[in-house]
Amino acid sequence: MKKYVCEPCGYEYDPEVGDPENGIAPGTSFDDLPEDWVCPICGMGKEVFVEA
Image 1 (cartoon, rainbow, N blue to C red):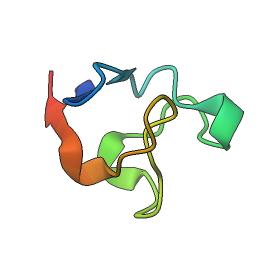
Image 2: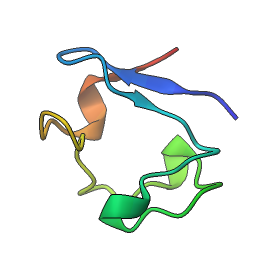
Image 3: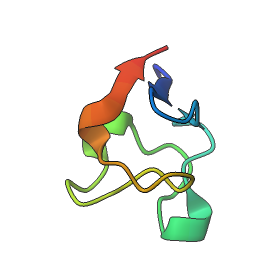
Image 4: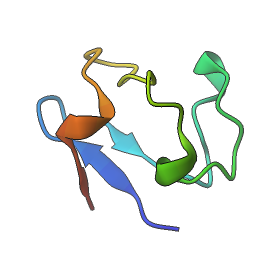
């Protein structure tokens, strides 16, 4: 699965790891993240992420 990077802060979303602290299970692809999911570092939305 592809990784995605938050352009403003550099946080990398890795689907293999997910975002367990925010209820996103490992194995969740970026496309399957809820529309209201935000970067756990800076709080920006999915629209600022780019494919790594």
